[in-house]
Image 1 (cartoon, one colour):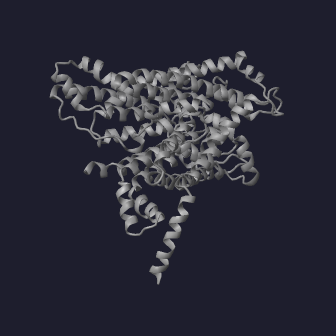
Image 2 (cartoon, one colour):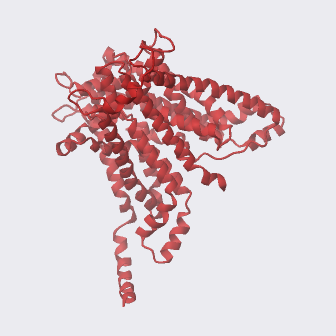
Image 3 (tube, chains in turn red, blue):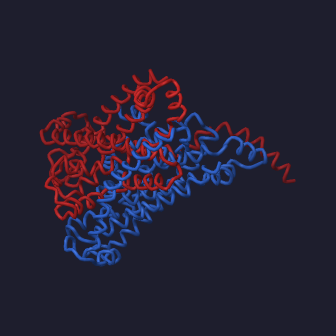
Length: 286
Length: 296
């Protein structure tokens, strides 16, 4: 009896199925991302370009030209680029040391786990750690430059950029096959020639990709510099924070949004540059 | 929206290491002399970087063991304060710690509910959409979190009118952890032969629901565990979103203590405890994660 019902139902189901396409199963995810990721970004851009009554108003963008704001953007760019280059170069060296070891060894596990902690979960805590190391109550020494921009904060940024580089660059180094080195040696290539003509071109896209990730990471970092004892707002995220928390009495109600659009533009410029670079390098990597 | 278009460019650089996908490799082919030179370089690198990384943490530990910051001497007072510290008129520090831990669990659970069925479904039925979904998942890496917060203010105004609980932060935290969770789950899913398993199960009369939750999901439990722990630890360290949306999690609480009472010893003990806790979590994860792969 059950078998017949089953058999009776099945064709009906099969007939109904085409009406519900399979991609419907993905809609909860798409809806979630739309509400909590795409829509907020859309709101930011829309609010920055419109006045309170909803008509276009590009004049608020002129806020980006004010000298204080311009300085903040230049500071942000300097700090992000400086700490990204610092982190990428030193991080690549450390990543090489990690990647050439035993892939299941304790050293690699410890460095990977520690990198994960320091790169992503530091935030406020890192500012405290450097405060007690080289700050005014420092145990190692009292660095006079601890509270100066960009050197003091740049060092702290380096402290989370290097581990992030280790995390993202080790997989790329793992991709270097030992056979390539052997092939290079069998053909009479020196270590320098191997690095110059084989390893470097292969690693370049991953390196610059990682550099870009580090740059974006520093650009949006807010916790560490906010918890840093120097309370002058130096970078754009801090200006955004101030604009958001003291919105009363501002002549320009959408300051936070305009600043955010400025940041988006900055990311976009850097990424476009990266995409162009990668298109060039992709040509001779094939 | 140019940043969105260009976002895909950064995808290759995302940490697959986090997903435990590092490829094993032996260096048997190296000559002994070069191996020794390499080892010297490695030990020097580990030592120099180790000092750079450990010194601030040691300073944190030492300072947490002083009766008052900078006073010298030894005392466990700051560690005892972790459970007793309270700013008058606000909930205690330890209650913030507990709320943050719970928030981490909720975020990890919500992430799994959202992502696991979706990813399996895509693999089974709609592979053509996988590029789009991957792109959306990795997008939060390229959009600065601070931009997201600005846009979330209206959304959270709406939420706060209905529910003022700190737990409501999980809605945005799920988005924040998407890139890491996606990489971990994708690595887990790729290690499963989805096609064969689902065909076998379907052939034996299993429903799609059974295929997803009783056949494929249990086979990718490694990826699920990785994704959950990563999400959990990310939530422990989150500051800007909570702070600017006026919620108080652990990091915000520590920040406001540091503003009210600069150099309060309890800051250093709590900071050290959080860092070590997260470190141990990730270390355990690496040990749970790898042996399976190595035995092959």
